[in-house]
Each structure stands twice: as C-alpha cells, then as structure tokens.
Length: 146
Image 1 (cartoon, one colour):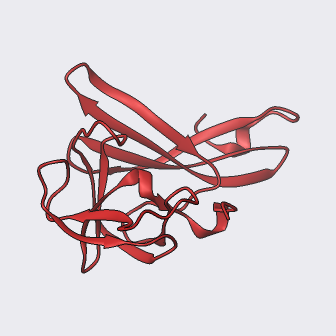
Image 2 (cartoon, rainbow, N blue to C red; image 1 turned 60 degrees about the vertical axis):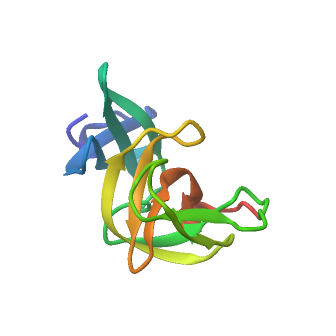
C-alpha cells in the first residue's frame, strides 16, 4: 500500500518506500505493521535472466543497506576462517580477508547481484575491506542469534 496511514484497523499491512538501485539488484525502504505498530522493513530484489524477482523482505530492518552498519553473522557456527571478504562480488572475486562472527562492519556500496551457489547472490561492499555476500550480514537489533 502507498502509506501505512491507510492500513485498516486489525489488518497487517506493508508499504514500499524509496528505491535504492545497485547493479542487477535493488532494495526498497518500507514499513510493516498493524494498528499503529510499525517496523522499518527492507525488501531486496535481483535481476536474473528471467527478469526481476524478490529475494526477501525483512522487518525490522535497517541493514544491510548503503550507509548502515551491522555485524558479520555466521549462524552461530564460527568456521576456522569466518566469512570471506572478496576483491569483487561473486565467486570470481579473490578472497582478501575473513571476518569472524559478530565483527562490526559498515556498508559503503552495493547491492550487486553476482550469483553464487552457496548464497542468495546479493553482495555489499564493506568500507575499507571488500565485498561480502548478503547472507553473512545482520542488523544487531534483530540478531537474537546467540
């Protein structure tokens, strides 16, 4: 819907706001909620050979998004190396570093869609570090993962 103000009483609604374009990927700010209770939401889409498709929507959310900070998240299992940081997005990017679980990061570029079998294909540039797959980034306020 165009505005959460138009959401009927006792009904869950979602609104889509500003579009942020990347390379073969984009995300939208938005809100979700009911009865005046609202959460910030982000919706992520990618463009593959079949056209644009939704990857996910998450509420509450403020990360990953350009200009925001969050954490590296390994699902509670910390591998010996951690999450790979690459010189360019996707499987062809050289691994330039590994970041451990709960390492704070800031995003200064993206999203870029670069398919890789073990990820959803969305990549973000971490300030001063390189590129990381979206699957390993989480907003601290929603983590509750440990």
